Length: 328
Ligand SMILES: *[C@@H]1O[C@H](CO)[C@@H](O)[C@H](O)[C@H]1NC(C)=O
Image (cartoon, rainbow, N blue to C red; front, side):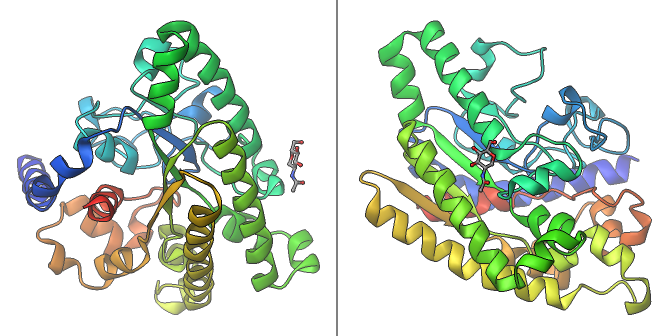
């Protein structure tokens, strides 16, 4: 136990050394961290929504403050928590639906994400999670509450100077397209990706009209290497699914292009594309490059079937690393 703890600490120290010199540059002007997305960033909203897709039990949360499961699909904190801390804001961004928090807590960061959701409305229906349009509705309600709490002018300043993290898309492919018959009968996988990009564009345009100006747009991960995909790949020696990885890489190129296009066409918009794909792949293939990993993470990467919970994401500082690099 002690040894697991100290390994975790050395891993965190290692990462903070990489991060710290650049953090100062990014701090200026970011008032709050506001999150839209799926299980890659959900901080526990699903606990307060009538869905079976929850992670409010152990071993989730074992490396979180107090070692408690929070609803994050993760051993500890998720990317936006690390980014928030790196920006000098609070160390964990609370879930909007959690009644334990008030608008005072949400004034420097709030999380609307819902595990299992996607850009496609049909994806959130699969496990009855919060659809993306409903995340926007919650955001609108939050804006009103914030204006009532801080006053119009101050609230508007917070909303304009916030960093918005957008992280979803994996479920559209894995939980919806490759699992259910409907979308497959309508679209080839490339066409489906293009349909998702259309939804992404609509989503970003809508939040832009609500005042959003700084977005960290997260790439898809090498989704063929997620623990679930490797666990079900029994006959392939638990290897990554190459087809899913190829689809993710192809989608990412277009997503990055969409970000550039929207930066040119929405005045004042700044979209940073956070390309986690190759960093994630490198971490799986050459973990030694990243220093000594906590034992628990190592086991899950090398023996995915040992992490019996298929949705247990092992959460690194990826997001923080990339965001900080981008704003340097
Ligand atoms: C998704 O659902 C919302 C709410 O019903 C609707 O406004 C929106 O048009 C739908 N999107 C698509 C692409 O069907």
